[in-house]
Image (cartoon, rainbow, N blue to C red):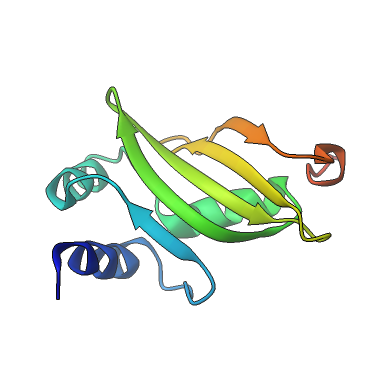
Length: 114
């Protein structure tokens, strides 16, 4: 098993008991850095991210990347919209606050809070 496979396997076990079968997961950081950030509470689990996305957006997560830049961990997502468009979304991994969303027809993607 190579280094990337070990990292992905460990994170799948760590982040969620939910199925990742249809989601591509990429970790571009060192495994030890990721584990340390999780232990320090700098990264929310993937299951929490899924819940946040389901509350805020219409669509299905098809790709997740986890990156660290200048001490800030970011989940970068690709969503498949109900009409099969690809939407790109970034969430700050600690607070799960949306940083950026890109794509066409976003008015049909963003759920309106009532």
